[in-house]
Image 1 (cartoon, rainbow, N blue to C red):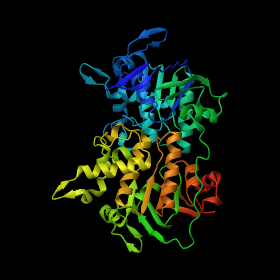
Image 2 (cartoon, one colour; image 1 turned 135 degrees about the horizontal axis):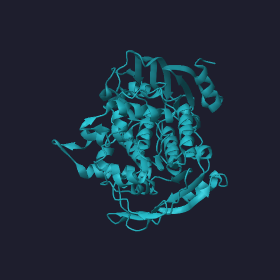
Image 3 (tube, one colour; image 1 turned 180 degrees about the horizontal axis):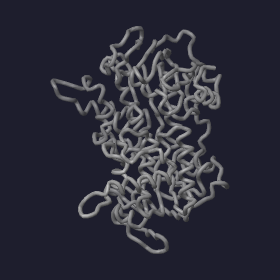
Image 4 (tube, helix red, strand yellow; image 1 turned 180 degrees about the vertical axis):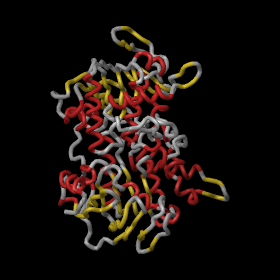
Length: 491
């Protein structure tokens, strides 16, 4: 398979074969061609060269309807459910059950219950509005929609990205149920540990080429997968931390912070050069805590102080002026203006700096953005390229560049490596270390407990809106964090 866009080759000859009833994992760094490959199989793109042989016959997949008609369904990382509709309406969206021009709601509800039972989620009611569901249950709705057709292959793009540990276990259970029925699964992930639990064979992409195709999971060491993905061996993923100076001043002080119905009595401090991590499961209140510190949510109790000066509650403007910057969990919808060029996104929080007589000095904006692009090794190094076209790792670097340009003293990083490949992760980890070493105070939220423990100097274990324990990262491991969370009480 080959595919080019405006002269840029996204696929340079990709080979993939998938067997009935198997989980075929597709690995590769951001920009390796994974998204283009699955969109070609889904009928969103048409290949320039190459053939697709489906169940023994050469086919052309001209559009998504053709793919569905053949029995190929795709679940994208950004789930395509409609929050304002019910579960049943989402499942049959586009192929509604009707008779005589009238929708058969009762039949749709009956079939929805059957599909949900098949997926082990008979507790979900067909008339529930999808907007009320968790990310994990929205995935179930997306799977049920696929199964409402006669599907033989489901492509899953980063399905575990927003799930906690228990939700991932349930996802794997559902996948195994599907494969036991002969349905094939193409499973795209950045989490290498997942392939040991769920995968049968692996195809590795790099720069639009197949570096390995259909290799057995059981016979392929992780180090070899990393080498195939990156072209090098990635060792010491978490760079060593610089010793924290004994006289390092407290930059951020959070005292008794609370948000009614979400979390309460959260207190911690971060010194210059320190990384503080919030560890816990999805839904524990971690993201809401950093969003409240940032002023995106208005606290109902407590104070946030930066360099000794208290901030006004619920004011992002006050937080940014005080030197706080947030890289949100949903960087595409909450952090970036995707259709604007890189230089606009980088200077977005510092526009007054580039304004002259009511007009923005775009030349100065581009110059400053170019400096950050070089410093952060952002690729491709083109200040006019739309943010939408960059990989997840490079989009994350844009957000970091924005706050560096602004002169931020406190960085709040919510899921900084979500959807980021192993090579880019190592770069972001090194960058976080450099920012801390330069005297910045850093707060990290991550669903991956190993990531929090590997980067943080101090860890707050959070569960059900409460801080269970605060302790040095060196004094606790992943098992200890999960044990605290499951017991729900401080040790």
